Image 1 (spheres, helix red, strand yellow):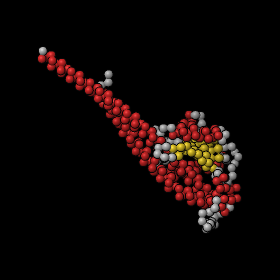
Image 2 (tube, one colour):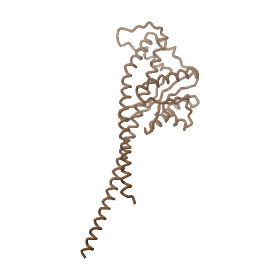
Image 3 (tube, helix red, strand yellow):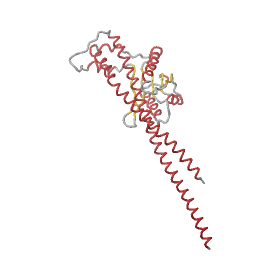
Image 4 (cartoon, helix red, strand yellow):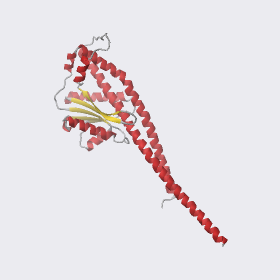
Length: 293
């Protein structure tokens, strides 16, 4: 039968665990906000880059011919996962989403060259016999995202040169509201030709058209580099915000379960204590009655 000491230790250990969970909840909530701010601050920069592409294609729609798709059959996949655990189904959902979308486009595993962000997602793919070309560590803060994007861009350019990739896709979880998120996919390379065609046909917002003196090819190359940078940076920030949102939801569920367990332990402890007090009182009464006789 459990003793008082047993219940005291269980309550103490459960209380310590609850403190850890609450701390992780707080850290996740703070992290979500900083990554959300990073996404928000990126909007103006992204708008500038898109405006540059807009005016370039508006003035010369034929320049889109320079963005060609090579028919090599090789597809690059950049998959954003997590570095740490305790984030629910975060990695499983984005891995399943990637598999489903590649299957819809008739892209087999042999055609893909996979780069993963986060060791957890890499382990999940390898456990399912899906080869991973390279594993990148995730940045631990907003300030570190820029360095991670540059490192990833170098790897992408190296693969494009050596492997002649036909397509490059990004797969990452995108935060929606509260602690929820949804898997998301974008075609990183080549730029979507339908979108570029739409830009070339879209009227400029004002009557004064911007002009440029830079060679169109150099300008296009520079804008594409900035567009790739923005896309990767946004994916990092969105994925990290989603990871922390998933961890927050997991910690909220854990906190509820721990509190319920603590309440049950406390009830059992109180019952045991009351039983002991009742037994002592009965012993006293019995002794008093025996002396009275």
